[in-house]
Image 1 (cartoon, helix red, strand yellow):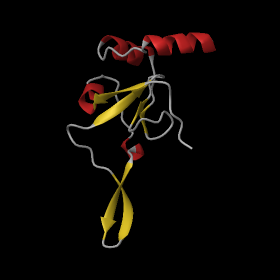
Image 2 (cartoon, rainbow, N blue to C red; image 1 turned 90 degrees about the vertical axis):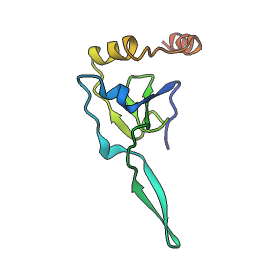
Image 3 (cartoon, rainbow, N blue to C red; image 1 turned 60 degrees about the vertical axis):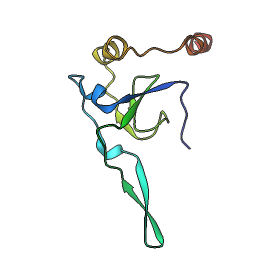
Length: 104
């Protein structure tokens, strides 16, 4: 069963691709359902220029809101975290920071 994280934020794919260490795993793209005649089939979706990926609270990038499915990028390095914080301005909202501190 897919796991929903505490927080994620959608960004246009081009924002992720601007990171020098970006290497995407497109084999993990979500599948789309298409009707062919009377049958419904699953096909890997095709990315468009205005599509989004999701930056998760653990700095992994997914193709969807679930933290453990369709992982596109998981090379979490100090440089990647800095890029997310400084360039993408990604930060957990105050309520999520409090929850994380309480769980520690």
